[in-house]
Length: 118
Length: 111
Image (cartoon, rainbow over all chains, first blue to last red; front, side, top):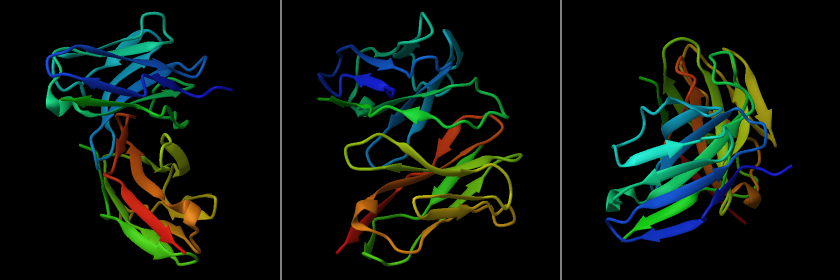
């Protein structure tokens, strides 16, 4: 079946513009994650959804970042008033089960959206 | 908090050479450990995992053993191929059950 799909693949924004990044997880996957990967670094956790509920947003770097998953499937990461330091690859991942200490089922990652803020 | 430390790259090897990429971790409790791989132009893929001490994860000729006493999960392969050229990420899920990644190690394999 289809994997995790992200769009757009590339996004160039002028500083101060708002952007919206879309993630289509694998059908039926309960858990959805957003990660930010700066150049030459490992992915950093941003936020986590279980179905439509955003259970953890501790990684969002500022109140300019907002994520939603209103129907428990597609998710959107919105960045308002983009800054140059927001330039990174934004990764979405989904997992079939809930996020529990005993659930170590693998995350399935999308190819990411590369955001460049000029 | 949880953290993962990987050896810095790039690691450059000739084809058929032996590979080791070091990974050590800090976590409370009993984390699960993972290696993810990112091939050029592709998304992160799970390579292997181990969920408890002394477990060995293996896939595609790669192996890693969960060593609790040294808090390590080193990645090894006996004979690398050009097609193994990629960025390798060590990661863990701790008590928070979120994936925490290392910074990644780029492997370049030449003929």
